[in-house]
Image (cartoon, rainbow, N blue to C red; front, side):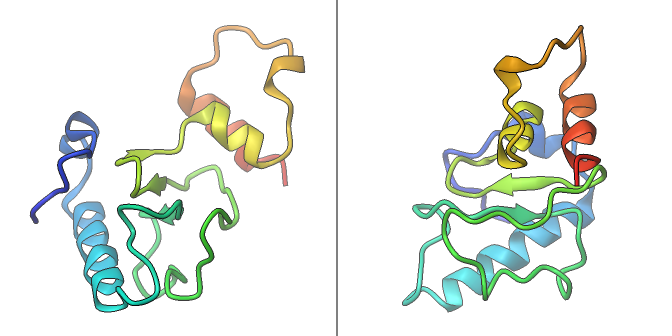
Length: 117
């Protein structure tokens, strides 16, 4: 897979081959549908922890995220990085700056956002 220049390579090196294949499939399908959008320049959220048949990327709208789940791995193709835990909380409508949190990790914040449904 030829990765775009702006992708967070250290993060991708830690991922499984199945998730890298998922990114490859999503990029190929977005290139096929290039008259609609370009995934490198539009704010889409891809859940690379899903199966490619479950990810509804063709019906996706720019700027709208799918359901945030605790085990999910939302990926921002225009930024080349995953969605951070604090960003997942903001997507759920939880004001992070008003919470009194301790030393939670990004994974714990993401799980908290996924359990907020």
